[in-house]
Amino acid sequence: MALYAAAASVLAGVENRQGSIKGLVYSSSFQNVKQLYALVCETQRYSAVLDAVIASAGLLRSEKKLRPHLAKVLVYELLLGKGFRGGGGRWKPLLGRHQARLKAELARLKVHRGVSRNEDLLDVGTKSESVSQVPRFVRVNTLKTCSDDVVDYFKRQGFSYQGRASSLDDLRALKGKHFLLDPLLPELLVFPAQTDLHEHPLYRAGHFILQDKASCLPAMLLAPPPGSHVIDACAAPGNKTSHLAALMKNQGKIFAFDLDAKRLAFMATLLARAGVSCCELAEKDFLAVSPSDPRYRQVHYILLDPSCSGSGMLTRQLEEPGAGTPSKERLCALAGFQQRALCHALSFPSLQRLVYSTCSLCQEENEEVVRDALQQNPGAFRLVPVLPSWPHRGLGTFPGAEHCLRASPETTLTGGFFIAVIERVEVPSSVSQAEALAPDLTPSPAPKRKKRRHLGRPGLCSCC
Ligand code: SAM
Image 1 (spheres, rainbow, N blue to C red):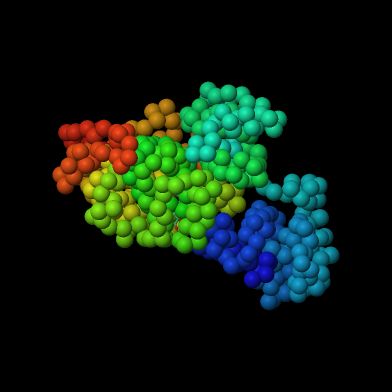
Image 2 (cartoon, rainbow, N blue to C red):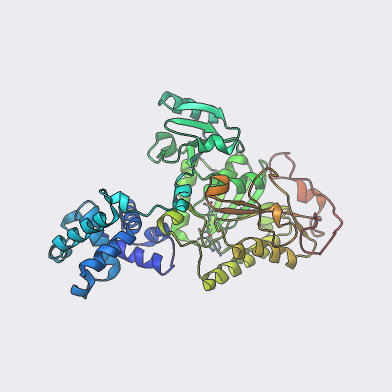
């Protein structure tokens, strides 16, 4: 498919809520993913401007066969982009007929708004301002290197290291070529928001991973010791999997599942680059993975980061302002899957600790999923109170919900995120104590299991 047609098709898909720009770009058959992604993002960024210009130039009225999304992409290229790449094919003469009128309408719009540059036409609201101020987080991959070495490398490149930050204000104040160590996560470096490290040699060599701080919390809070057996239920593209492997020092086993073959293939490349060797990838529906399969007998830890609306994702908040509220039907379908997946994960007989996370801001996908899953397993699991100093907590929709964590650009300088840490309250009767505690390779103990009396409403949080 040609570039412009592919871009128009992604824009239409995003508008119809079939997926995110990134997801639709990757699932398109267009070869040059980077080029397509850049064109779609830029067109989307100027969407309101392009709509105004196309409407006032009467383009769609004159060219009845030209579809609106394609018109938007073509007008972007003509007025704001790089000109028609590869000649523009049959679209060039068509747009050529309207070129003068379109240019005049763009100029009129600028005069009307009192601006001289194209960028000044962008309506940058306060929301996107806080989104664009989220720092660039760099997770050092301890499977390949250590923080000190990475810090030294950046210093040699002219960056100035400011040591460990003591508060979020230190992160907010970062500018220029300064960088810090995160106050909470030991292997996380923090750079000013606009720092682009995608072409950095250490990134390309897998020595660090570009991963938002909130997305580093699930693996950190699951904290499987080396030698553990872990399930990563919805794993691709695998940033959290590689973080788990680093915490486990590549010792033990991660069973990583995902339904999507393309994402799994991409994940295999990322894991190889990160030096992960303890992970078994499987293209499989997690709901069809049998908890009684002897292979998972020693699985004490599960990370469940299921598909969600993505309403907290930074790229989505920038690309699609207003996409924060998915339709009721979509939310209902997502929450249904998330709840089935969480209940399924809780049915693994040796499970001791589970982290449930989403990059959604919607209560239906977060607190309500956790509440319902706990209610369906009365007294068996509890929410663990984690990171007491974390400023943004779960919405108080049920007792104990404050043990969950939320994250957002405004409150934690990260993407929007939700995390719940769930622990088994009692030893499952089918599993012997020794069997439940023994990790595979090393003597490192799994988390201590406490016997608890259930207070308050059964099935909710037994610690409150
Ligand atoms: N944990 C990943 C990471 O950190 O890179 C991101 C996971 S993404 C939010 C959700 C993933 O769940 C998608 O890759 C999707 O293909 C996968 N998925 C959706 N339904 C699934 C199912 N029933 N079983 C396994 N994977 C599923």
